[in-house]
Image (cartoon, rainbow, N blue to C red; front, side, top):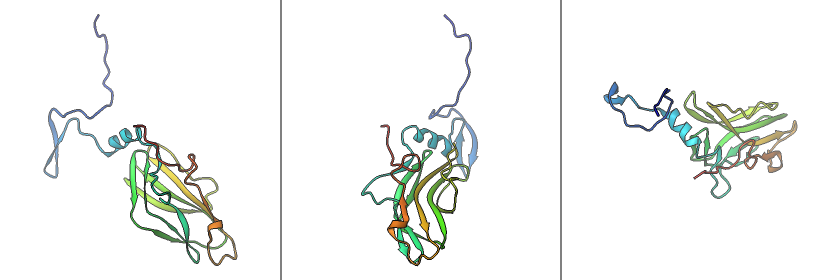
Length: 169
């Protein structure tokens, strides 16, 4: 028997056999990989979602008056990790529905906590380079003075919107 054809495919973590470039004084090998490669590799073993600890991670809660707050936590999306170290507050306005979500953007190399007004089902967006985790939906009536827990629908437990990390290891 003999090999009659071969085709090289993407793969990695192979040792480089030669230096092809120098970046800021550091050698770059011919088999070097980037962050996107590691994210793709990690996405094979870590699912999208919030890393569950005490149950309060990335929880949206009333922040006083017409504001909401999001608690600290760790989350994963498309193999990228995001860490929120302290509560973040957002001011909202009367007469709107809001979607509070965490967006992983591989193209721009960042994770952002975002609030979208009246999204009409646009969020969550999912693609190889974009992953949204919907934390909550907030409904603020026309005459609302203070946002209360009743106005906040926690969606962290819904796998199609957010979910909790399930490791495949």
